[in-house]
Length: 388
Image (cartoon, rainbow, N blue to C red; front, top):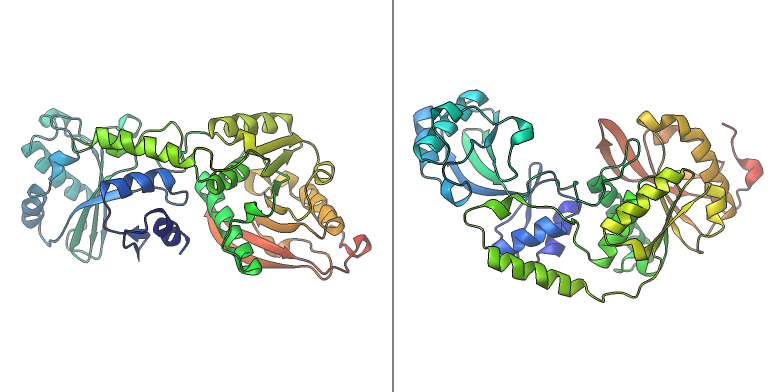
């Protein structure tokens, strides 16, 4: 639901709808460009170039020949990566399907001669050179990659710590928190317009940067190329005008001020966060400070939103100390609105009268993770806290 809502906000003119594994819609080239630059939740974007029914290889070949390959793949180029998925269909052997696709591309003179028919190794694949086939109940859907590398690779996070939260997941947590606060306050405004954000375990600063960047309306990506830029059909001049118009929209949108604070006990983490913020062009709206959770809390404005990713997985060794510090601060600061990202939230040692409300669940590096809102009894005091 979040991705559908985001896409409808990005391109209201497109009739977006849900589909298995994502969303789809009939979009103009400008809407495609806008989605690539603006989406914070999608991992990839594809353009569907054909859909047809096929139960045999001769039919598959015949229909593949009719597709507009030359609009998306350069002639006499390297063989693209061909990724096929088959479900409940007469054509179920993926490599046999891939061989037919390569045969058609060779006959159409899209790829080079016979000795280049093997797929290019993954590390050598060009950003524009991926073809996807989904064969489900004998319906073949053919798409070409439009975005290139996964969209969580924004281009700003070159400095990372141990087990960082992927940018798209961080953006999803910010999106969910914003929706939850809007519901509580019955307001359609972004929470950063009224509150400040604090991540006391900020690491390389991903949560802070994603929150501030989305609020400012900045492009989700910086200094990266999209696969559609290499298509033969690509409108280079129109795209340049589009990029200029996007910059003009964002210029002077908001007065410079600190919208979010990221803190961490690690000096190296703070330095990484600052560099990432500079590359994302959000540095003047973020404050990254080295210090303990208790120390930094003294500098956090009243009514702030606490959003942090507690240690889990390879970071588990610091979980209990971090959680105790968060609880200690929350006992003293009833004004702070806390949201916690954690694996195994049901085992969180909560003081009497406290509770958790799940806001979002997802998988991070194979681990089930939950975004939880912490609810507190205002009468709870330090003596009530359960010992861990």
